[in-house]
Length: 151
Image (cartoon, rainbow, N blue to C red; front, side, top):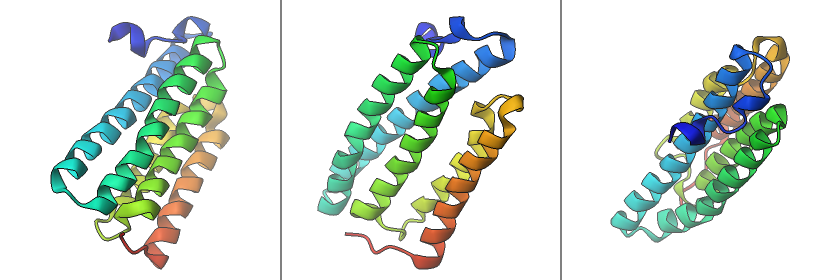
C-alpha cells in the first residue's frame, strides 16, 4: 500500500509537494473505497434506485484510479489534483442525480470535499485550492436550495 500512496512522489520538487502527491493518492483511494462501500450497502438494501446510482459511480472510481495514478506517475501532479477534485465532485453529483437525491443529505459531501481540497494543493497554489473549494460549495448550495428527489 505504501507504494500506491507514493506514485508520483519522485517528481515532486520538495517535501511539501511529496506530501501533496501522497495526499492526492490517499484521497483517490478513500474515494474509491467509499464508492465500493456504498455499492455494497446499496446491494444489501435491494433498492433499485440506489443500486443504479452505485453502478454508475463504479466507472468513476475506476477512472479515478487510472487517471490519477497515471498523471502522478508521469509528473503531471497539478493536473492529477484537478482530476481528483473534478471526479470526486462528479461522483457525488452522479450519486445524487441518478438515485440518492438529497433526502439522505449526501450533498453534504460537497462541504467535506471543499474543506479537503485545500489539503491537495500546495500553499503557492492557494488560488487553485480556493477555486476547487468554491466549486464544491456552489454545488452544495445548489442542491441544498433546490433539492433533488431520489429515484
